[in-house]
Length: 631
Picture 1: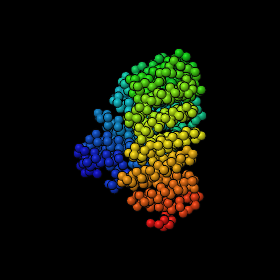
Picture 2 (picture 1 turned 135 degrees about the vertical axis):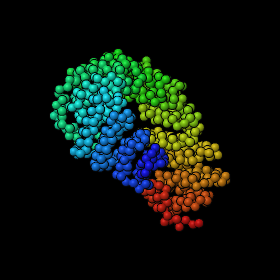
Picture 3 (picture 1 turned 30 degrees about the horizontal axis):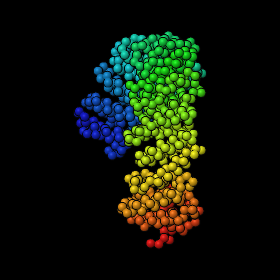
Picture 4 (picture 1 turned 60 degrees about the horizontal axis):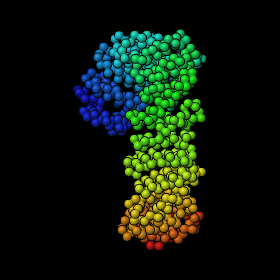
């Protein structure tokens, strides 16, 4: 702790900015290096917050520190009570000052501590802290003449978070907050409206469960029970005039506030028999013609909740047309277009669960054909939608989709980043999962071989694609066909032409060797490896990494194939590795494999290799027979 607090000399000392950065990277390590305990450190923070000589900017940093590390610094009830009490006391001392932003930060910090920690609120001490803070917020919210609008807005947001976490706690104060809402003429009235809509939601839910004496809430993954008695006020408040007044004020609110208030009122209308869904009718034109995601999403919420009670057939059609328009709008960001395309895809995928209007009309389906101006992600999503639609089910129709995949393929071949690659392989997999026909299998083989020929580095992606097919579509024959095609592709190419990307092709052969011999041709693989060693040995390029990759392929063949049919080829290859490589690690590992193949029964060798998933485990298991190999 710094002895001087002038300027920036606060908890972290003269080099406070560096120390604060270190703290945010790893608070526990920071405390350990300074030999400070968390229970004493938070006292230092509180002391600096009390000091008038500390700059307000530094106090804001310290309050943020408390907000971000509630569980670390305040791990028990005593620290919580001490900290919250101190913060409220400091806040009260700031009354009458013009430090509005600092006072707002104090409120946010107290709310974060009370709601962000793992405390037992059935404890009378902690429960009292929450009630005391709630009363302070109510006092600020209702003081519309003296308190600054920013402070009242912050208090409303804090109360809203408390009400969301502990439904019913602010219900007894609904009437006074409603009166304050009606008196407020500043933009902060939106915060009042959002808070009141949340309270109304819980109020009508409580009416539907009037027998409940306690409110059980779930927060941060754990279930807690707070003993707030049900208020008799819920039966006295008239919901209808409040809802209508809130709806009348929506036209003066920002889009974000409109979303929050309307979203809460949807639940209110669902639970209140006196309110009809048609009260939202005047908002449908705006909601169904906007590209602002929250409000547009709200239109779908209304349609899902109220259906034909609110929407006419024409309005439903307008909603779908607007969704398709937004998904294809060139001026929207890629992220927004992808979101809208995902919504369309959900409707197409689950068309059996929706009314006919939600199925894309045939006249609009061609709008999802990719254009040259679409990025790879957008092109992929569009092709997903077409592949899921009824209009593209036959081989002839799917041929058109495969042709449109050429746009993404060109981006892949040009090496234009990872996004085209991801989109290309995801789309291929989705095509096959939807239309696993022999025609598509042939097309996929052609596309993948073309990619491997032009961009050998993507051989690893081909391996991942094969593994994904095996895992997600286990009865498919495509993995075996792909393996056969890729093995032949590698085997038929001159070794000199693939040396630059040899490691990529060897990894592909390693994966291929795990499949049955009828598909992977192990003799061809071994012959190719022999040719690789002979070619590279003359060029003095036998390094440690290459040796390990070659031995990994050998290990895979030994583990998955009949050694009696490959005895000569595998023995010659291992002997060649032993005698060609200079690295002791490679020579010893090759010796062990050679000894196992030539000295042990085939069943014993397989047992050793199958029980050991890594090459180091195999080496250790074979170490006792190394001496059997001469030289």
